[in-house]
Length: 260
Ligand SMILES: [Zn+2]
Image (cartoon, rainbow, N blue to C red; front, top):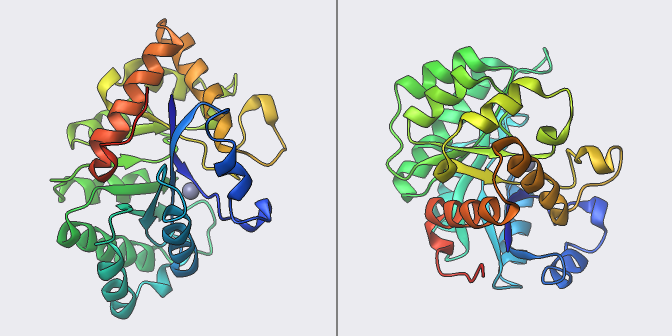
């Protein structure tokens, strides 16, 4: 079965706090979903929904869009939340320079604060990095990741992937991989070692080519699996098994879930 390693199932677009997604997990071939926090409220929602079902897990984090909310007070609150059995990672956090108006220094400060939280909490990290390769690789060079981490919805080049892999990080592929014009990303999908790749949807965002313009759902992670199998010339089963094992190894608090 598949694991969607990154989704936002409590997003208001679903209108039911993720209940219908969870109720169809078995028929959708989903063994687990990691519901990722983007700010304080979505983090609290993710933890609550994780406690509603054994196959759902949560992370604590603040997206780079909201760096000013990453206060000492919030980090203290997150440190307590991170001890929860269902909280498997710190993130998503990182750098996003797509929009010019964002304060880059504030983003770097917020990234460093959450990196310190992950180290203190002994949890892996979930990185969101977009159009910020220079500052991010500089940060990577000076950092160590004893509990590892993942580059969520990776969108960089083979060269950037190599820097991340050399730091012990995993590479997660999302819907963008299914686009026929994602040539650089297809190269990364062929290059990354089988034991270091994850699949995800980032639902309700980033729908795969097969559902372009629609709200995305965790079950669509199957399209990412299929594209990875096609690009690497291996079976869908092999990708499914490897990515599930990799996710359980990285997010070690979920290592006992059944993925058969
Ligand atoms: Zn996300």
